[in-house]
Image (cartoon, rainbow, N blue to C red):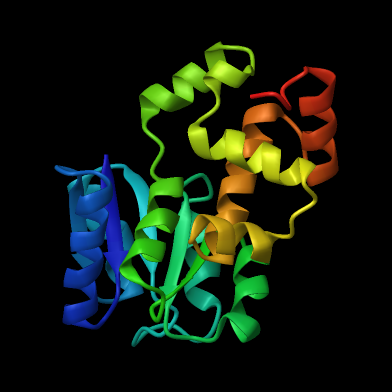
Length: 200
């Protein structure tokens, strides 16, 4: 499986490549400098596990990169990694199908945490699909999220407690909801209470 880092700035491509390698050493990472070569590059280098996309490329305008990638590769996780303002673009990117919005101004630790939350191995997927949800099948971070939900903490408060960005908190919730087969914080908390998980 391959991660494609799409950014027209060579230094940023190198930095992201190093951060992805810290998440998953040995992972194949292909740098791309513009959007219109993505399809041909994927054909040569293999199935994407993750796209890291800068919004500001020579051949994109605003949200167009997100829209093009999600139209061509709807099932591949997409992390927008950009210097663009979260207040202006985050909600629009997520609505367009991005799985995470990562500001380049974030610390390396925060960027790594966001990328780690998206890089799920095939083995983890099979394990999650094959086994019923249970406390022993949840990651340490997912157990923390359930306990923090029970405490009524906001995404911002959770981010501060865990020393990660709010964007990463949202991605963790996305994975937890998918894991439990629910669609909201309320449903996740109800599931946990019904199954007696709040002592985990």
